[in-house]
Image 1 (cartoon, rainbow, N blue to C red):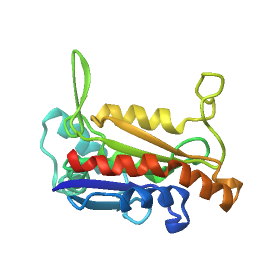
Image 2: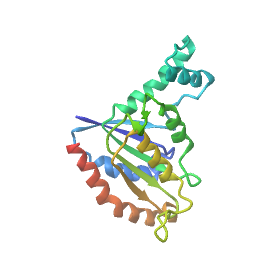
Image 3: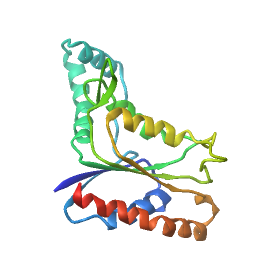
Image 4: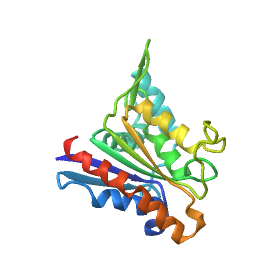
Length: 208
């Protein structure tokens, strides 16, 4: 049985367009896939403290941690272990001010460390996680490429895609749920248009 880690970066629950799309995906999952869910706004993510930053530097240099550093660092490593042991990933990411929600950025900062989620050598970085990722981007407007060029206001997908590559996720499949602010009728049409892709990607996890 494979494990799918669902990382939800929306605080809106069932009212979230991204979560509506995610539910289509999850309803199509094979029975052989087990779910682990992490709702970032409810998770009580730890803060980055002086002790955490000191522990990170000491860990990187192979130095011993003091008692408080070790205590706080163990919370970080528990989050990392949950992340890297997943076989596949589903991310629900709304666009906030052209980028990602601050809780997702906090989570990324908490788990992204050399020696834990990536390494680096003369050939560049190599991710220590693995597995396919489905990323549902929800957006109030239309931020699709324009005239063959990326939308200049889309800082959401370029940033997240770069991070996913750094930590070793791949392939990364994107589902864009856009124009969500145009009203419920438009949103329903958008979700129905994305349904075949979501169902196909979920069904494919049976063979992963």
